[in-house]
Amino acid sequence: MKSLERLIRKYSDYLRGQKGRSDNTIRAYLDDLQPFIAFLQFEGIHPRELDRHRLRRYLAWLMTSARGRGKGYAKSSVARKLIVLRSLYRFLVQEGQVSENPIPSGRALRIKVDRLLPHFLSNREVGDLLDAPDVDTALGLRDRAILEFLYSSGMRLSEIAGLDLEQVDLTRGQVRVLGKGAKERMVLIGKPAKKALVAYLEKGRPELVKRPSKALFLNRYGRRLSGRSVQKLVRRYALRANLPQGVHPHTLRHTFATHLVEGGADLRIVQELLGHASPATTQIYTHVTHTEARRVYMKTHPRARKQNGRTG
Image (cartoon, rainbow, N blue to C red):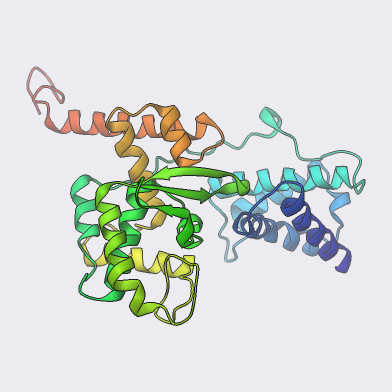
């Protein structure tokens, strides 16, 4: 369906030009639209033919069989895809392709999504992870600096991978970051991260650089280290440190925020450091700390599990 392909290309241009979305965000939006495109092709319809009845069928398909072999997406994934679909139809209304947005907002079509609390590491686990790289090698120095950066700053994966030398101010211990929506913010790094970065810049990066490059973190060929490579190295060191499965760069971002809140940091400051547009997004970390506090209380207080007059 060439007309559909053209619409998606125009939507991509709209996200980049009018909305100022980053390439990574656009890629994520388009990925979330792929099941919808497949559904349209299966139904043999154009986006303008989507109505409430077909929308319900699409959502049911997402949750039951969209991934094949009778498997559907998790509720959280379905909810995210619905948000992207609303965005697409807002664009189509603006373009005059449809007269009204068929995707209801608010309570008209609510999907109850289990609010999963973000996984984070304990202080000991963070220490084990940061100690995992072999700092006697150039790559080990680089990897130690990356891990320290992720935990010390709370930066996103794309932000770390996109860092240039000129964005880092070692004297002040701060980094100028270009975040979501091309919004610029300043993040801070602590002394251990500064120390690891200095070691990498003085001893590691000179061995990796093959040609002039503005990129801060380089791969073994002297080119900018990709986000995928950062994901792989985090997983590799997590495995080496005997951490639970599922540790990834965003785990360190969650850990950064959780440890700040646990330490008494103001949520507004945490929001600013994370680059969250809404304080509601940052609010989840208070739930994390409350949940952890309850877990520790129930496990350790002698009368927390009192049953029938006895402690459990």
